Length: 170
Ligand SMILES: [Zn+2]
Ligand SMILES: [Zn+2]
Image (cartoon, rainbow, N blue to C red; front, side):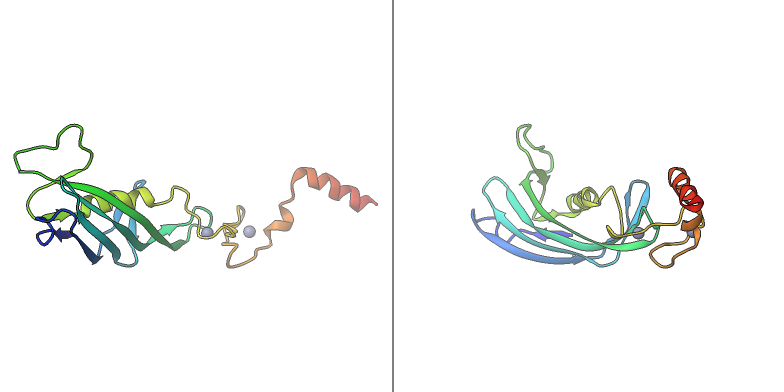
């Protein structure tokens, strides 16, 4: 995932646009492998800002997550803005302490580490296939989004059971 900056590197203010479609291997999140269902689409503008190159744009893809309620896999659209500054450095030099940004050498900027890190940050901690997800029946384990089971009737809150008994008596 390299961006070549040779066409803009000698002119402050010059910029170029890049569109990339990258196939990613699964990435680890919270001890699980998260699969990509589509290539990662990266749309960026790279600008020569004098001391550094600003890279900004959008990243989007579809990943497969596992619902915490019904335990089914579902597709999740992941989309975020990307904005990083890359400082050209000679191999033997390091970034000055007060400079915030990412060092690179030569004419190619490798975006992969930052894109990967940003993807990991964008994966939601709480993964639910839909706000309406009914989850699994706590008694028989049936997926209540797909099927109704008979368990509900036997599963009455004890406080409600008292009321039910009262109604039966009347
Ligand atoms: Zn679900
Ligand atoms: Zn059930």
